[in-house]
Length: 92
Length: 92
Image 1 (tube, chains in turn blue, orange):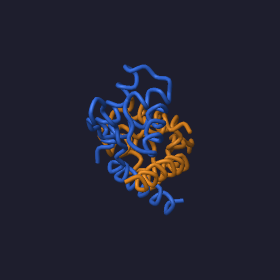
Image 2 (spheres, chains in turn green, orange):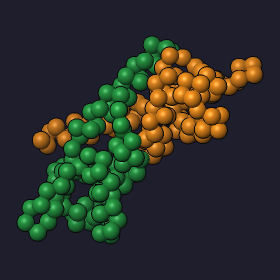
Image 3 (cartoon, one colour):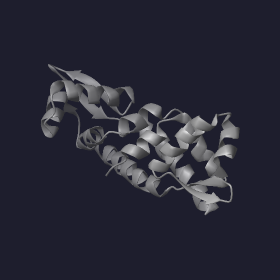
Image 4 (cartoon, chains in turn orange, red):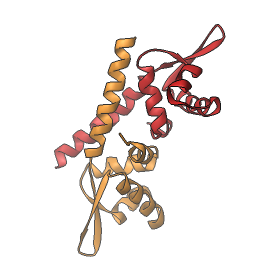
């Protein structure tokens, strides 16, 4: 299974914080940037990485694009990590 | 929490395959390299990344160094992913 993009997206602390923030509901890039004191270019970069990894979806509402957490790819990664851990318990 | 190294280590398919292989027990670099048809330098690089991420430990036994899967850092990542997923279910 290809977790490359998921894992790369999760390897940055700011992106993990953005995902945490989106647990509270959809937010615009401006709202997200405000929370972390990030410039538009920086927040755009992080949101693009998260979007390409399938961890967020975006949707235009009027003037703004809203970003929503999507944890469906997280499920596959969770399943893989759980089997890795389980296999190792048997070995130990 | 700092999952940077864990996630970076997991973002490579060969490294994930090495972890899978180590579920079956400790292996030397030579044994691991053989399984994947990788050169010594390449396998060394991957094993170093996994070791720095805390996903494997190494131990010298006679002439060879053996690598063992360590899933303790996986537990923290699992917990983080589970709370992310759980929070999102509540939102949906």
